[in-house]
Amino acid sequence: MTLVFESLFGGTRRVAEAIADGIRETTPVSLMSVVDAPAVTECDVLVLGAPTHAHSLSGPASRAEAESWARDPVKHLRFEGNAGTTGVREWIDRCPSVGIGYVAFDTRVDMPRIFTGSAASAIAKRLRKQGLHEVLPSESFLVDKDSHLLPAELDRARRWGREIANTAAAAAPPETRVKR
Image (cartoon, rainbow, N blue to C red; front, side, top):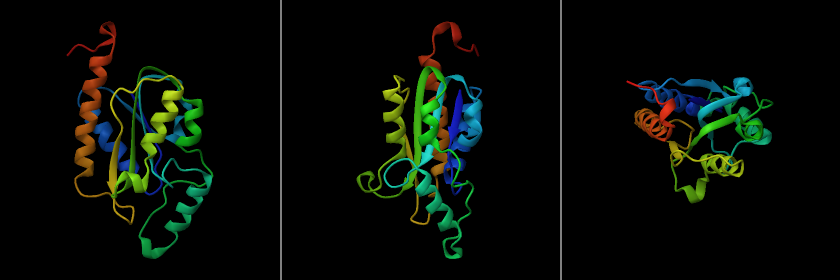
């Protein structure tokens, strides 16, 4: 299993790490930033996540805006990315060969989805267009208006990671299942 994420302020990275922790309880998983992911050429299950920007995936302009937000000392944000680097939006176009399917997640502001949009929905739509199968419905992990994760989101991400591992194991062809 391969988990690839984009994170600008650290929330999506922390969620990705928690999901990977949940998966690792039963299944090996490779965890990497989208910046390091070009080396991935194939995987059985792709878990892909990103922050929600302007109702969808980040782009060069929204990453540049995020970088400027981090320079505002009042916001108490640390920018982890580089506005000029590749994000999930660009990476999906050269997505690896995926055997079983994908799972998408995002971080978004704690408001009704109709107001915030969802990067996970955009990920799922793009991967479906490539003919990939969704292993588990996408999930959003919530941040406050200052882009900080809400309490208990990391615990929820770990539980979801376990669910991903169990669902993927059940979906795997019998000859590839790991015997425990």
